[in-house]
Length: 142
Image (cartoon, rainbow, N blue to C red; front, side, top):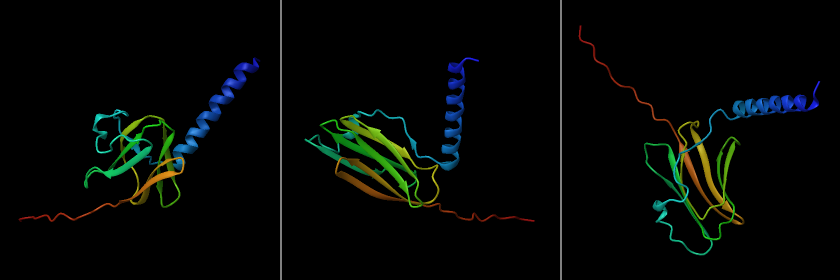
């Protein structure tokens, strides 16, 4: 038996098991909306030396948060989204401008922290997701 093929098969099995465990632990993951990472709509943040970030709610109806970053020194920075029950998702970037939408609609109700960190600097906003339910009255004429 070829040992090279055996190791390749074992690596494939390990990757499948790891991805299955990850999916089981994190059934809901914030979705990163496709958007140009170096975007012209990042104008609310003037380019200055250093690092600046803003975290904004796009719409009260949509469960989306927009993160703007100016990073004139092009250092590594991370966007974290963490839940109150201990789950955390992180996205790493090394670009001068970021204008990214994060869709939180797949997450459960609760409080989340959206944090942008570059070295010792960090910007944090609390996001609360809650589902509003209402009963629609019906009329029946007999």
